Length: 109
Image 1 (cartoon, one colour):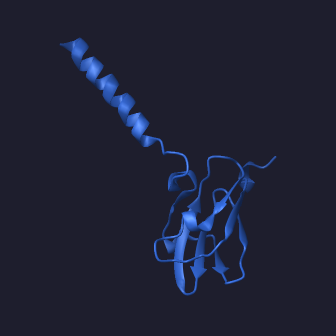
Image 2 (cartoon, one colour):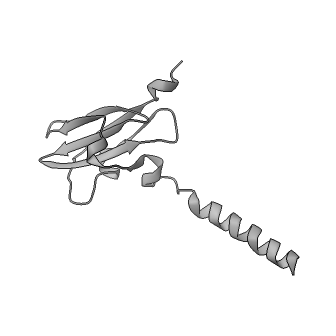
């Protein structure tokens, strides 16, 4: 009985760990949505905006034509880049803006 119970616990832990990891290209690879009141800074996305620079570990409020969303950047690599549209909420058209994520200033040599 104990062997069966132990096997069930181990299998549950393995499956749970697998589910907790995000698939490549998911929002979790870029960080997470955050409350607007806790932004380190705000970036205005205008029609001519092609890119934005942020730091890993930074929380940024994006203002797009009066619509605001806030994102905490926590990428898997020290430096990364991706399209802002991947993290923008549904209904917010950010256009073709690339996000360049620099390494966290706290950990730079």
